[in-house]
Structures are given as structure tokens and as C-alpha cells.
Image (cartoon, rainbow, N blue to C red):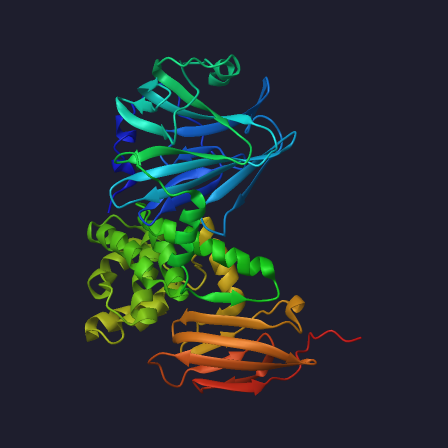
Length: 482
């Protein structure tokens, strides 16, 4: 698996020269090999190693609007995938900037697309910034260190290149030249300017690894590919539409996170992907975790996250994860960061293994400080915990609590959860209301028998050990009354 540090272009960046670029705050984009860049609210893009950044603007008549400088930029996702579009208002409509990551198995490319949805012809410009390199810009491409960096779909109308404190947008406003230009220094920037008629689109490819793609997909096609990746995953349909949307977005973010070369970040994605039924994606992250654990690199909370990642495969998927061989070194590395819930999962995952290992895990679980609580560090994993914790609590042995804390706003509204991978089998359930009384339908798959189901947030008096069934629950005590 290729890693961020091996990106061919970024390794040519001179280190230790100039000032470190500011970290751009935004949302992650990437592919199945991991994160590539962040996109901010204005559509600016910065690679994860902060080596490169990209900004854009729109020319209308003799005036240029730069998206991160002028007001009016609005960013949102495309189809809840890690693909973004940003709209910039111009006098007769919007010009849209879209960005995604394409990967053909050989090359990784940022695909940046512009669409003119206004009723006037405009010009668009894409500017890339780098550090400690030489940039050369022609109407056909921008090269970095002699290799193609920014490749336009068709020949640009002009090109600019500047170094130091020079402003590339000042040159763009002054009508950029058509001849080749170059810049070299600690801080350099180059841009291409393209005419964009009404209702037309144009794409730029930024080479992250490998070479430029001859026919890169557009961001909408890439978003469609993300839908295919998550098509069979856990689905959540509840009264809170924002929760369902949040879950779909979290899924894509976690699939990207699973390819991270940060073992803690990768490990945090694993249990959630297992819960979602995306164990193939989880296994990609587990490979990073195992490699780091075997090298003795994981300590503290990273070791705890690794234990949870490996135990999840044993408990939720029913397959070997290598936990038997790595439990000792990870538990030692976790030290005082180990929490009771993780230790209990470890003990359950190892109880069918060698007797000595199982006994050690049980003793460890009994000795852990109950006041220590595991908290994920990444935004996606934290958000996933909030969403999933509303639906199911499987932390107690042989026990699944459906809807442990149901929001009052869900009263009288349908609830459907399909394919939730608990520690005690894969769970699906629905709630339909008959007046003030909810009907619960459920089905649990898996090898565990005598698992008790309850529905504490609605009817604490009900429980069942049946694998499937339906029942009419009591009216919840929080039900509204006229």
C-alpha cells in the first residue's frame, strides 16, 4: 500500500527552507489508499503533508473574484461522499468548483472541475502553491521539478508563475501571458487561466502520485464510485434525517481514514467499519495496525485503539486477527490508558484461545482502573460513536440494548436499522407505532445463543432471547400526552 510520505512529487519539496505553511482547516478527501488532502469552506485544497495547496477564482469582465478572499462561496458534499463542490456567486448565477481524488491503481490524481452555471461566459483560474521547487507554467501544463503537476483538460488561455511574496492573482488580473513562465524559490506559485462559456465544464488533474490520467473521471463519477463502496453497509432510517445523512457521510470518511498511515487513525476506523459490515475496508486498516504493533510502535491510546481493532475482527466478524500473538505487547504498550470496556473485549476475544492467554486477559480485565474511559481522537470516529450509541448498546456480556436512549422527537415516527454488527451478532430491527405503543420487529444473525435483547429507551420491562420476532411494547413513560 502506498503511503503519503512516498508521494513522488512531494518528496522533491525542499525541507527546512522558508516558513511552514499554515494548516488549512477543512474536510478530508482521499481514496481507498488513504487521505490525500483537505478542502476548506471556500474550496481551497491543501495536501495532508502541507506541501501543496490550490486555490481558485472566477473572472467576469474585467473583475476577478477569488473564492477564499471574496464573499459568497458555499461548499457542500456530493452525494454524501468525500467529494466536494463549492459554489461562487457571480452576477448571473453560480460558478461551481468540484474536487475529488481519482486512482487508477497506478496514479493518484486530484480532479478539479469547474462548471459555469451562470448565463455569461467567464474565465476560471486554478493556482497551485509549493515550496522549495521550480515551477514552469505553459498553456499546456504546470510542471514541478520537470514533471507534470497540473494538467488541464484542454489548452489554457494563459499561465502565470511567481515566487516569494509576489501575488499570482495580481498577474492573472493583468491578463496572463501565453508564453511559458517559470519561478523558483522557497515559496512558489503557478496558475492556469481558462475561458469557460455558459453551461460548459473543464477539468484539471493534479498529479499526486504517478502520472497524469489521460481521461480522468469527473467528481460526480467518483462520488458514484463511493456509493458502490458503501452500498451494502449498515443503513439507518430514523426521524432525525440529519442523523441518517451524518452516518452516510461518516462511512465515506472512515473508508478514507482506513487507509491512513497513522496507525491510531486507521485503528479507530476499524470497529466502526466492522459494525457497518465493511470488513474488507476494515481489514485494510488492520494491516496497518498489525504492522505497527509487530514493530512495537504503539503505546498509550494508540495501543488501546489497536486492541479494539483486532478484537473487533474476532468478535464481530468471527475471524482470526492475530490478537493472540499481539495482545501482550499491545496491553503492555497501552499501560494506564487501557480502559475496562477494551479489556473486556480483549478477554472475550481471547477466551477460546490458549488457556494461558485467556487467563491473562481475564486477570487484566479485572485489574483495569474503571475510571479510565476510551475516547477516539478522530472526528469521524467520534461522530460515529455518537450516532451508533443512540441505536444499540452491546457493551454488556450476552446483552444487546436496542435504542438505549431514544430521543423524544422520534415518538410516533418509523425507525429502521439494517445490518448493525454487534459483539453478539448482526442485528436488524424496526419500530412502528400504534398510537402511543410501539411495535418492535427484530432479527439477529450470528453464532451466539442466549443473547438477551432489551429496549431500555422505550420499555425497560421487555426482554427476549429469541433470534427474531415481533412484539408490542408498552407505552414509553416519556410519550407526550395532550
